[in-house]
Each structure stands twice: as structure tokens, then as C-alpha cells.
Image (cartoon, rainbow, N blue to C red; front, side):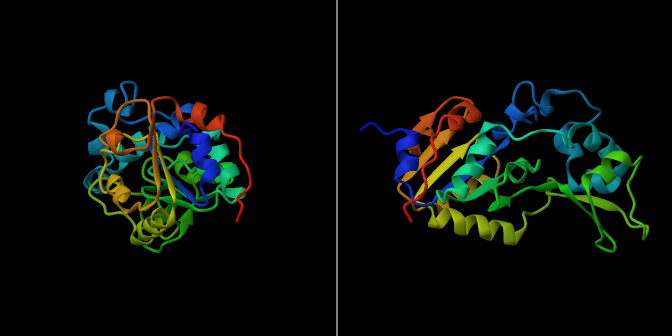
Length: 242
């Protein structure tokens, strides 16, 4: 029997999914690094500069102008990939989703075990008192959003120059370590430390689904150069034997 994604999922008892921006492009959210992505659009500063901790602290109003314009796709809907992953988790086949995305679409689709390496636009906190604010508050405010206590509100997203959350990383590492199948999709695997998590995988099969080639293509058991939603959408979900 030839090795297909369907057969690997059928045989798996505990799969883990590791996804990047390419998982959400089919929901209309642009990929930062693709030709039509954010990095090729014109601003006074490159997005990588704007989305840095230093820029957030020094030019907060300009940061928020960009952030409201480009980083708050609150109406985006989960696509076939998000929905299928939630279905696989409900069926007991998927043990976790590790994502580099901050759009919350996995949770919108119904996934529960989601490790958001770069945080989420759906959570925002006062840097002074810690009060929580939803994304609509950020979207509907003008200039720099402030808390009722007067403190500066910051999105709970990991900016450049900031470290990843230790609890999220250790949860992701645990999920990857116990998985027998790892599906990596929609990521160029060039962003560290996120890409470094692959080294914790000890399972049987590694699958890569990405539009373009990645540095790990030679290490994978199966490489599919197609859109993530189209590939996962075809998977038939069978309940786990466990």
C-alpha cells in the first residue's frame, strides 16, 4: 500500500499538527512572507520593524495604526483545514495543534488542545494592572488604547525581540514528543525558535504540506506541495481505536 496522508492518519493513534501562516491564507488572511504578503506592502517602516517590541514601546500610535489595519481579521472564518483538524481531535486522532498563527481560527473551528506559539489577537492586557480586553476594544478605539486605570494595553502577541511563553512551548514540546505522526503545514520552517520544535518529534512519520519547498523536505516521509485546506479537506475521519 502506498503511503498516503489518509493511510498515515488512519494508522496513527496520536497525531500532532504544526501549522504556520499558510494554514490561514485560505481564510483570506495574508501570509507575511509570500509575494502578496505583508512584507511586500508599502509602509513607512517594514512590518518586521513595526511588529517589534522596540517599535511598540517607542512609536505605539504608529504600531496600532498598522495593527488595526493589518492584524485584526476578526471576521475571518475557519477553512477546511481548521475544521478537519477539529474533527480529528474530536474523533481522538489528533493530540494537539501547535500554531504560529495569532488569528484564533483553530479555536473558532472547535479545536481544544491548541498551543499558540506567537500568542493571539483575541487577548489583550493592560501592562499596568493586567485587566483583559477583547480584540473589538482594540479595533474600535482610536490612537493608543488605554485601560480604565490609565495603563497601556498590549496585544497578547509575541513581537519581534520578545521570547515565547514558556508554558506554551513546554505544552507544545510535550504534544510533539508523544505523537506518532507529525503533520507540518503552511510554514516555511525558517522562523526560529518555532521551527526548532521539530527536533522533539520522536514518532514514526513526518508529513510536510506546503506550497513551496522547505529545508526539511528531505527529512519527511511524505511531502505535498498543495494548499493545506484542499489537502486536509479530503481526509476521511475515522474514530480512534483507543
